[in-house]
Length: 556
Image (cartoon, rainbow, N blue to C red; front, side, top):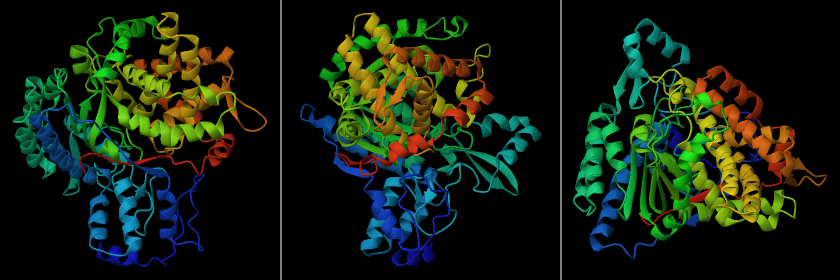
């Protein structure tokens, strides 16, 4: 990495972009240094200081936030190692260098958690190897293939549970693959567990106190079930936290391995109360899913929680590249069956993205008659129903209560799950209209805001699960005539075809999940999760609109 330090200081060093060029990628050519390209790419992230009101918290709660942020920064450091094998070494090498160009590289490496561009196909944006981030991120040997992994299991089936475990890293020792639990692999685990125990002393809420102690134990034992159960009991606290290995988006090889993240939240009680109405309809949504009735679960936990919160700190997976705006957790289907899910909407993040990203997109891409219907409340409502919809449908494959849908669909799961949540969010709007919870004006705003939102998420880059999910939706609805484009290239909806198309796509995704059909999932991704010439042209018109935000928080 000493050699890298020298290279990055040579701003006149020219490189060719060895990766396939995506639309809107600033061209790395002989007329432009890689520093120039990075400068242009940084403009895709609009700087935002995310505000949060802590004035109503007690003195002890404010100290708790400080301690939780300290824990969050440790979780963030673990994620640097998971993001890519060389993410942390590149970051640390740059930290030893000085100069204006070096500061630019530091900033973009920070945004991407490494030298690989999240938006542009995970291609490397500074000199070095490999040119594209390995699909297995930092979870597997950098040169390991799928065949090698599967062959190891075939030769020794007793390794299967360890190798596919959410919380193990795969290494190669003496020429053979080996699974090491996170609790043993990451040296920061003990410091993180101890910090959570320290924070628990400031937690006035008994359930939050119990959760923090249990989470510390989970980190040390690599068993997160008990702590997930206790997290579901945290309901009345002004403060909540998501911390530890959560989502599997970074593992694009198999989708098995969970990445560390930290989200420190301050509850917005007033906003939460406004959205409580959705909770009473969760069973109705489930019983009326647009799928074969035999796939619909007979036992549904009605205790799912819905919380509107403001973020005080983000770290790790949720902060990398395009930022998370909501979450539906835990992912463990055992916990969901026992206690439902906890849906957290990050209100200050949603508002920032609506203003900085969605509104400018709508003003450029939509038919002028639709622009007045772009609505912040509709964006928040749709996002909320998206998270609610994550709790719907099967967690286990139909007829096999030991095989999780996530495991059956492997690396194809995340994109289809995000697609399911999006399309069911719209479908559930129709339910709420029929139940007279929504009126026609609210539905109009929801549809139009949804249409603009497709372009917002597609611009996250074709390697993103969320982008793939939105490509599937756009291309499917376009194929069915629900999305139309006029002669000026502006988009609108054919309302006579919209709901049938929404229902058809929801049925398709739900059926794939219920049957655990890995091959069919691949067919859908191949057919619909792709950029078309028409879409490429549309996206090109948005080149001056930021793709996301570069957010900073109360605790940095």
